[in-house]
Image (cartoon, rainbow, N blue to C red; front, side, top):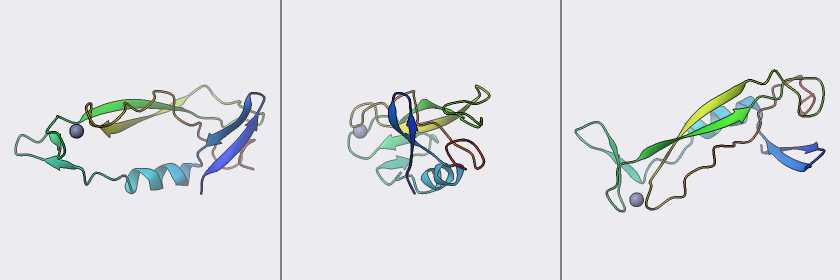
Length: 102
Ligand SMILES: [Zn+2]
């Protein structure tokens, strides 16, 4: 379930914690292969797969876009040649009970 939240700057996609877990479990890694050296390689071009850090701000406060200021950091694999580097700025996470996920 993709969720959105209305913020003063418009509608933003947000993640409920369950959705984040599901995305991590179902991430498609079939285009990568693990070799004997333990590294992941791209099946398309043979590049070593890199990990991009994505920060998800946690909006767990009672007001719009509010929270403790904490971030959840996710390591997203990507091929530096075939794929675009994921943005460092991930969707905010809205735990149950917060303003955006009552
Ligand atoms: Zn590649």
